[in-house]
Length: 281
Image: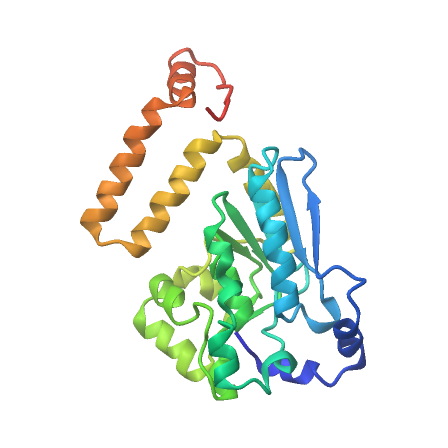
């Protein structure tokens, strides 16, 4: 959530100028060539995309717009080809008091992304530290470069992760490795992150992680939207539910898909050896 890198950024003039103006959007929204993938890019490059509440306000707005847009079938979240997010903005919260953060539920809006129903593919290059690592873990599928850096170094600031860094990380990599990262601030590379199960794919040297993420999103966008959303719901249920309840959820979603036109079209197309035409119905 918060990093030593973020502390250093507080003293730079460009960073202070970014904090003083709202003219430059903190999240850039664009579309893939096929127009069915929304690409959201964190836009604080001089601050290594340090995270702040204003940035998350914009990100939540853009995520909601993409989730409600019928033409969008998948979402890519990235910080660009250099850095994902090097932690939270220490300047924003260093003087806050307990009563303030508790009453106003500080960081509560930072995990709103978990309510988005469409698939979200994360593309990580460079730093994904603290809040950046927590934001990356909110993605449904995560791609990274081999030399990407993941860490939860909040312990070096006298705090612990507060946006899922102890919970989601433990689900993904196990107790021992999560303890190692949370209690020592250990950084791991993109290659290690894949070995540990934190990310699903690592790009090859020289490949654009953003382009690869868009390709993956386009592949997902080529399937029926009802099924992809049901698949996302079922997998997320595995993290929150006991096995028996998770299996019941999976079976119910599976059965419910037999009430859709896309199930009839998909199985019919398979039998007729043709490409299916999805209607999302």
